[in-house]
Length: 104
Image 1 (tube, rainbow, N blue to C red):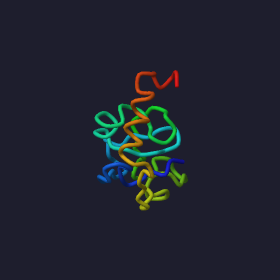
Image 2: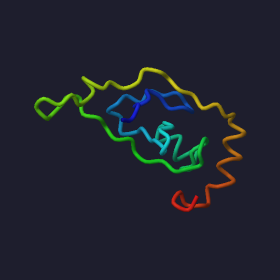
Image 3: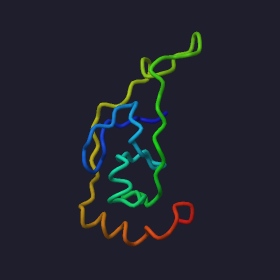
């Protein structure tokens, strides 16, 4: 199940579990829509893959007897930050942004 990280790994803005602004790559690197569109150009600074809107986990379980939803599986509280410098990220993005994510 997704960790639902609480922040953008670049600008550190809050991304609560219900945020439609959260974007994730296939490794769950988490960034806000503003950073993905404006700085990262849909290039994950870690793996080089693209991003998708992070799914929103329901607050409660809607199936009787199932332990589903945020009440049973809360979002992570551990803030994560990209280990890469701005200069390194810019070079990485420039190198591969012209290649569509499905072709990387």
